[in-house]
Each structure stands twice: as C-alpha cells, then as structure tokens.
Length: 159
Picture 1: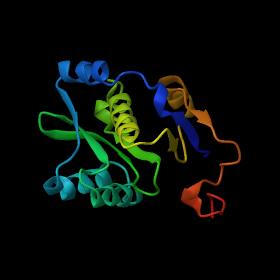
Picture 2: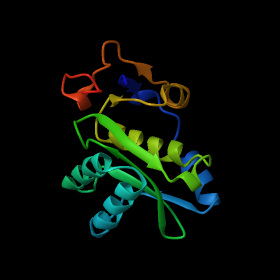
Picture 3: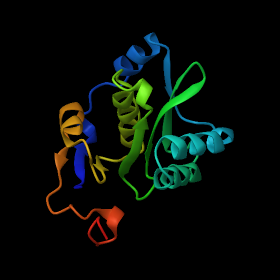
Picture 4: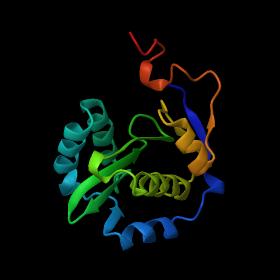
C-alpha cells in the first residue's frame, strides 16, 4: 500500500462539511484527555490494536492530534494525525453502521485543516487503502516508490 501526498494550502473549506454533519446530529471534535480510554477501547473493538496504539500516541500533545465523530454521545468514528510520524495522517475509521454519511470525509478534513493550522504545507497519507477516495476528496497523489511505507520498516507487508 503506497503513501499519498496532499497539498494543505489547497483544501476545500472545512465549515460547510462540519455544518452538514451537524445537521444530521453528528459532532466532529477533538477528544478530551479523560476520554482517551474510551476512544482506545472503541478503536480496538471496531478496528485493531495497531490503530489503537497509533491513536494513543496522539494524546502526547495537547490538544490531542485526533478527532472523533459522535452521535447521541456515542463515538462512531475517529481520525488521527502525527501518531506514527510527523506529518502523517491516519489511521481513520468509521463504524460500519455509520458509513456512507460523509463522516469519514469530515474527519479527514478536520485533521488536514488542523495540520495546515499547525504549519504543515503538505500531509502524507500513509499506507493508503482507498486511494481513489483521497484523490477525489482532497486531490491526493501517489508518492512514487512508497509501496513499503513507514509502516513496514523497509520490509514487505506480508513478512
């Protein structure tokens, strides 16, 4: 899975995306420090331990370099950046029952705008699965020669 590069100086505006989610009862926000255990448990339950460890690393900073999506005070999605390496977006995920509502896009955009505000000019989306989604949504382009990615420590993903 290759990495992708996003120009942060050319992002679509964030407010309309957050407003659309707000209208359907979904809040996108940064988690509070006291919500760390709840979020990590949710990530482990809905995705995997590796993603939970990456998300945990985002609580080193204040505010955490993660965002959550909530509906009726329940977590339904998350996105992180700077968890494995500086300038890297991910991991991100939305619960199966909440997919298809634009929540993933809102989480992605919240993180990328936060990265831009932190001074980054570009963001790296590491080990991309849905490359066409990132290309369409934020104009991300594949980084040539990045198939091994930082996540595999210079070894093939199957090893």
